[in-house]
Image (cartoon, rainbow over all chains, first blue to last red; front, side, top):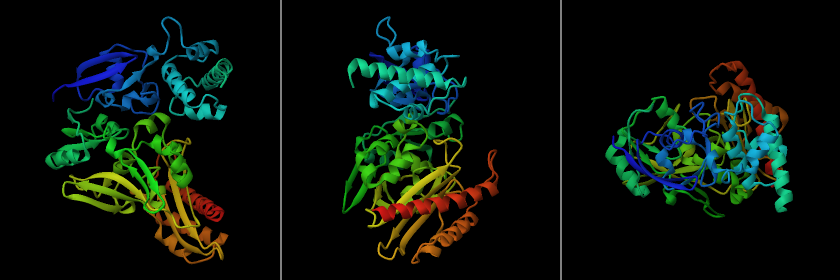
Length: 161
Length: 291
């Protein structure tokens, strides 16, 4: 069982590393390059804590082999901020207190980002349905949904869509 | 932790078949892996070789023309089917079924071919595909054969595919005029696996509303997605009335073999089958009439 050469871009940084073929993308992100903002919980594609964006689309990184993301661009929660400034979606989560234990938050924010990239003007129902693959075990959905809707509204006013 | 395996990345469908022929039972094809990785993690399977085909662009397409129908490459993702304007217009039932399949994340990475070959009897996409009379193209080194999708499944998580064969395409004929197709599922949450999934397609004579043809397929309540021929035969060639549909739904509830689980008893599942067959047949009729 030989290691395989993985070529991957994470948060704009290009990596070439030899990895065990069994390594999942979540394990690669957390253990090989040390970005522990991506969380692992159920490890079976249910909870969505490990959500990252691959070529702009949310996936469950525990159900993607690291080698499956060969030559792809991955965005994790660490790559969302602009320098020291939080992404406004992160800011909205803070402002709304949409974080309890925080374990689901990175996945929630990345799913929300992808949702809003596709649909800048979602209804509450569309936000809830867009987040169906992300579980908040604290049960704090109301504030999460409000944070996203609030950010979406502010963004529409700013960019006029 | 998964058992050790080597990963091979064929660069064409033909090369994948070559590797399949070479390694046969020692290998497993992985596309999106949204089901397979779970089997690997649980060590329910431990292949020596994974043939990673997800990046084969030649098997990722959605094509349609009025004569030859719809052709979906095995590597089209659930999400691409869900969001395809073409499918929303010509085969809305497929977009609807995909919309409630798992989660956006799973739909972004999982493929239709992988879902079919995983042969989970609770698949959301297989019952509507069978309702649409889908066939699958199966390839090995000696050529390509076509198999009706309803004949692909042998048992829980088992297909009739030979070890050197792979599914490359799903072909769906253009439905006859005045055909309505509906699918929905009963599940704990809207996007969970189907406890009971029901697809119905109905072709009507628009003048006298006699049923020319129909298909009723149940998911989740037998070892394979199951066509209920007994219910179909009761209705084919007849005019619809509520009591006939009721009767056919009752027969369907007796023909399935649901397994009790922690949530629902066998009896309860049969009740759900009865309610849902009736509901989906009525929806299919409505759609057939509105065409």
